[in-house]
Image (tube, rainbow, N blue to C red; front, top):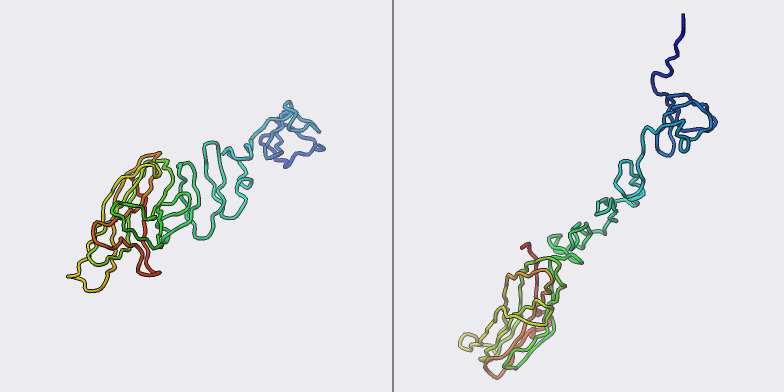
Length: 268
């Protein structure tokens, strides 16, 4: 009876390629992360340069940051708590942040970043901060009958997108003997080159209601302002005297007195 050689009826796994091993058709080996099947029996014909003897069965892909199947992410993520994200060209590593930081999207909305948390994480500070503030604790007074700068000013960076602000001004004021004084809240869209008026806080001291020599009070104002991309919002307080022989006073009640401007960014 004649004998017919059917050869291998299944692939034969031979493990890693060895140049000293004799391989038969349908033997399968691994090399460099790829798998190869023998198509012609031979010994010493390496898989990488002998296409007459081997066909590739499967490829591990390209190691690196191109996002291909088989990418070895251990070359991208190098430290515990690293985060993997994709930018315009491939997979990228975001190194872990520091204790207390929160994850946010950068100002260009192109990548994640870690930012310092403020107010229990409700607002962010740093390059992507949502709240900007200035605490003004210097004593100021003026007897000018026209508006002059108090020195309290909040400067912000140029905007990369349209942004709305809620602005809160606080003036720690002192009034004396029939004085009439005014604070003026102002903003600029071009980094202080030009200023626009928001409101005036008028105060008149009345001896009929207050018997002490002077009175302390807080004058404040809150405003909602919309800005466009490319503008540079700044905010400040000016002061003047309308009548009386005394001055406009800010932060004159002692070391604990302070005034402030707080700017909170909100989604338009």
